[in-house]
Length: 406
Ligand SMILES: Cc1ncc(COP(=O)(O)O)c(C=O)c1O
Image (cartoon, rainbow, N blue to C red; front, side, top):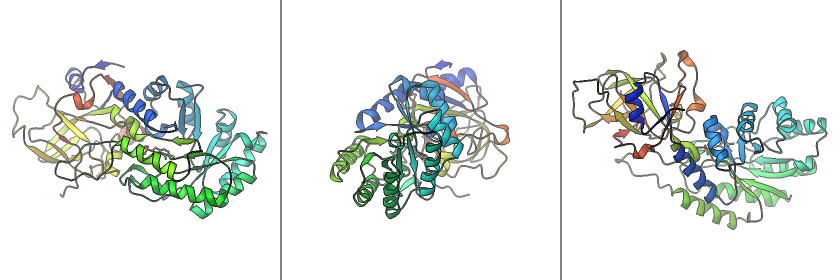
């Protein structure tokens, strides 16, 4: 990987016409260490958030030895960098061939379920492989309610009464029993975990089976850009949230149960920034070389406020406007699709023009992982940048603030 001191240095040296991801390795190390130190249990990084080898390698280098995986490609990605790491197969609905591969080849021993037919599917394969069910934990995913940028209970999760029956059935089949939940990504309500933990406690007390583990999933919010004209959403800091989770765990009687978390976003959000180029400025519209089909779909659907920095092209001699005046630009993505217009504006200096670059910060989560090949565009260049985004010079604007009218 090529190494630069700052994204600006990279942009001026390479004059890239295609998006470039800037990997801030030290930031990943600091954030990953901080999470593991704060969480009172085992940390299983959610590979789906960013499963690039350079990310997994960095985590493995820090001693991360447990990963939340969702597919054979993720099993392989983990195995390639951390051959002895434990994997938790926390996708509640799985293909039979993938379950077999997980159990037989990858020796995965913790799997999520939210329906009896999924448990039956797993049991058939366990019997066919002549495995001992007591060595396998089926973790019942319970549905939760809360506010998050991404709600994830619409699709998965058993209602509490159903979860009780499921746990009893799993216990009878001879498996170990776990409870898991996922409160949604980027939670927006600090009481979300407490509600989910309380619900898990209710399920546990009704089910009356021994519990091998409680997995509180992901959802831990990353800090993104802030719109100075709006009041914050009152989210506590990560240390405060962890303190709250600790006390909820004690209050609801889970002190005696091994705990797991599956953080994704909060670990990797800050470790990448993205340098995009303005292909054309048309009045208050900027046409850029990335968009919702490449790196920016998460900020689009999750309505995230990303910090941004203008990198003017020194080759442009004449500029109009005031560099200190921020204006809202409607941002159009690189593809031919009219859906590929960001739902929120970029606030950037009036002087931004065709050929300039914009460094968008905190793009490490659900960016590379969600890229498509639509229209033949597929950003894939990654360089290492040794200065963290915040320290790379003044942040001029935000890359998405609020809905902008036509
Ligand atoms: C089962 C599961 N665990 C963990 C995560 C990671 O969540 P986050 O990135 O909000 O930490 C996800 C994300 O969708 C998930 O589906």
